Image 1 (cartoon, rainbow, N blue to C red):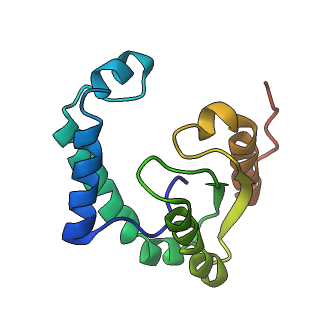
Image 2: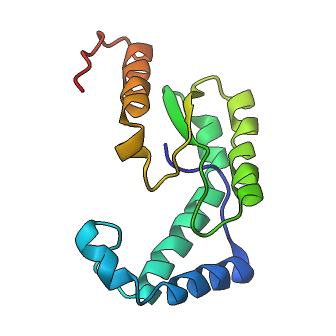
Length: 145
């Protein structure tokens, strides 16, 4: 899972996201061939991120009602669009969900951010998949590096 139940919302949040992507508009075409940006304009990137933030912000009730096992790999690194304190607040927003729903657990905390977690911490992600499968009663999966 790659989102805490919070996000930049409201007109201030939307404008902050738009401002960030407008500042990055010259970098985005260079980032595309590296897989770091989509084939979208800066404004399109902003709109996708606005929607993702709104969905994440509204996700706590959904997470609290999950009846199947969910394992999170919680990234503790920084984020391009948020300060360290804001990211800590975002991560802390998951704590009430963890307290109320025993099906949702943090499998690992890693130093990556959501942009690098699969590349840098794939072993932690693989272990979270194994934990989730085991919680559902599936046999152990072999690990290949």
